[in-house]
Length: 84
Image 1 (cartoon, rainbow, N blue to C red):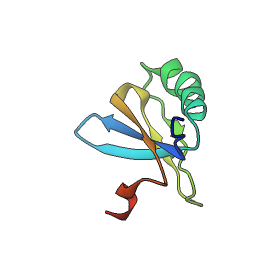
Image 2 (tube, rainbow, N blue to C red):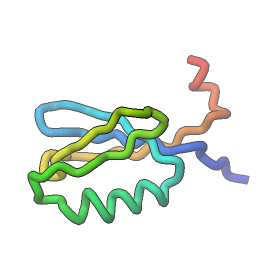
Image 3 (cartoon, rainbow, N blue to C red):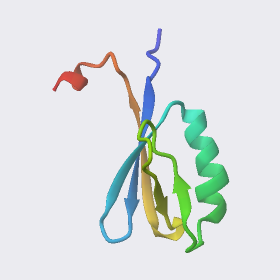
């Protein structure tokens, strides 16, 4: 039986060498945000909101045209890596 990720860490690689990590509870949540926000406005210099899970009062905005790459990584809470 395949393991099911607890959440997905999404690494945004931005112009200027900056990197940010945000987390989504499901891959479908990421795909919805990606399709509706980031991909739909890919050439725009207007800010879009990036959801930040479990951090009240904090938010992040990015310019879609400044995102160069995205890496999506499944996170398993049962993984031994969390204790490293």
